[in-house]
Length: 128
Image (cartoon, rainbow, N blue to C red; front, side, top):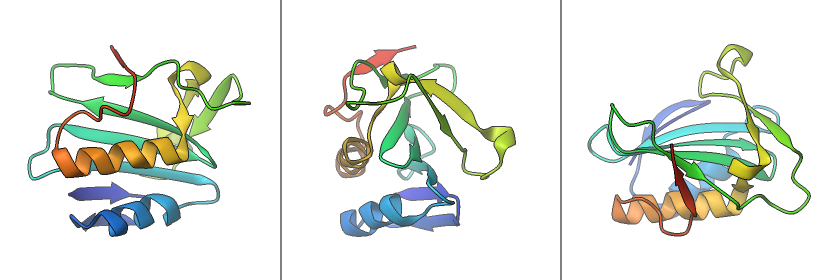
């Protein structure tokens, strides 16, 4: 898997290394990752703010992709702020609770993607 994040780029197919990177590469409470296989598509974009995550599954250049629906963690704020992989506010996004998951669910989904190369079935997806 190719991983671009707040610390640069890496390649690994080791699930433990992927999970460790997803849990530890942070700027303050923020993490941001783009994960793909041997080809550029499909890929997952994952953003973390503490224990809350937003993930987006992209299938093709001409398709807006998929994001989670109805999986918000208990007590999740109405909107959550996330940085992009460049770490700046210029690339930041704010996402509504209805599109968010807890961080461990996002990590599990990314590991599922890394193992299969397919859309993770552990997420209830909404097609945009």
